[in-house]
Length: 314
Image (spheres, rainbow, N blue to C red):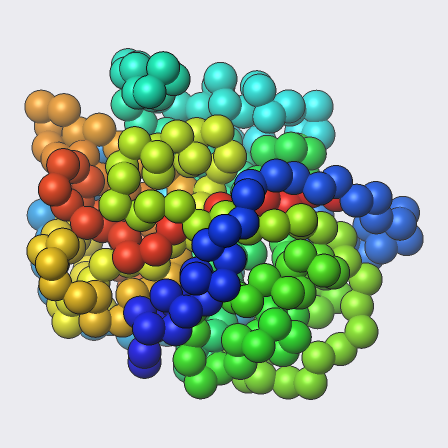
């Protein structure tokens, strides 16, 4: 599909971006039509069962959503939650000092209700990236406001040059200049259409790529900012993933497709098993672990080909 080459080109266009949040007021009318439902779900933080191969196809229709995780999920949508509360209350065990910052041994934004359910992009290549980007924006917006707002992935497909033929990180012109509408007002169809007029409910000033092979920086951004856009450093076996912990190819091996996803956390296995990242994909819930992939994390392991922060505000 050419994900890796497209993604690198898109990342270069924003490589000099400095991360900062630009808060722009939205009209009360635009908020009134927004879909403000909360669908975040908690996950089991134990080490997954050993990997096994299976059918990589998702049975869910394009745009379909379903909860992924244990049924005792914390909704976490109370608008009184602050970003500081979210960070301090997120599930972690012990703490390590990294570059002067204390980081947890594990965090899962699903457990705080900051991640929407898994979707299925269908056959639309650009939809994979669009859903991964909106996942990051939805999470950071929810951390700031307490509202898990469903955002339109279709607007990125139609209006930001993604289309359906290929993928990669969006060029960000739509995000930076305009913002994104609610999913309810601009629903996902899985095919490229004509860009429609819309009222944005989330705005953003810039996006910022950072070294995807620096685990410390990835963890810092994941804790300080929230869910992140990533592209998985994959090989031909990736689509056969059906559970367990996925082992990325060697760092020197180019990614086959560099599938985009939303990084929502990591787990430190300790004595129970290896550390791993938690990534929400958009192949439907019949793929992987209810739509998620657990990727081996550790020194000398290149889990991601690209990592970008997308920070949204009202």
